[in-house]
Image 1 (cartoon, each protein chain N blue to C red):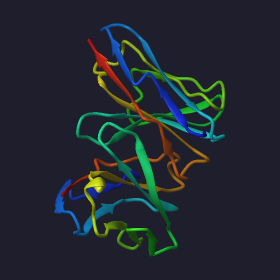
Image 2: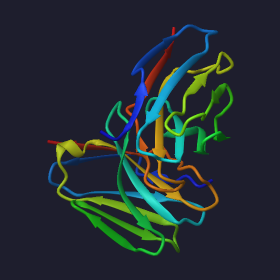
Image 3: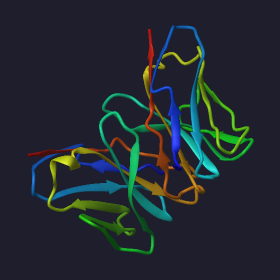
Length: 111
Length: 112
């Protein structure tokens, strides 16, 4: 299966702390994407990292990719209450043409 | 504004009835997708389409049907064969497969 599996399933932190969530996958990829979902809403694309990249930044987001370990991590620095959401990774490879998603990490940021 | 629109936001269906969920995009994307999400769970792929007049089954296609007669539209029909249709349904589109996906706001279907 190409879908990623996020870890931990749930994470609760205080505002201002950093949040780290991980993604593991099983097949070769062209890129890996991270998405965010607020409760009862659609997913929003956060960042895409290509298979030949090791690290990428976007504002308070930092994504790493280790293709040898088939894993990625998403770091949110200086978290805010508004970051409370579920976060999903989506590995994208040539073998499967539709993005598939795991169960996500539910992040709760306490004000 | 460019975007992807799902309607209706809430839908109620009686057991044994078919119901169609609408998904329209004006992003000129080739690829469109339907996902199902159950409470506290991730997204499961129902159907996807890479081009007009072509679509493929996802992981949970049984009890669902789709059509792709226009590039902009990818309606999903939940048939009476779907035994547990109560869920949150999400439609998405992307320029091509494996690229950034844009999601609609979802349709919450409840069987009454």
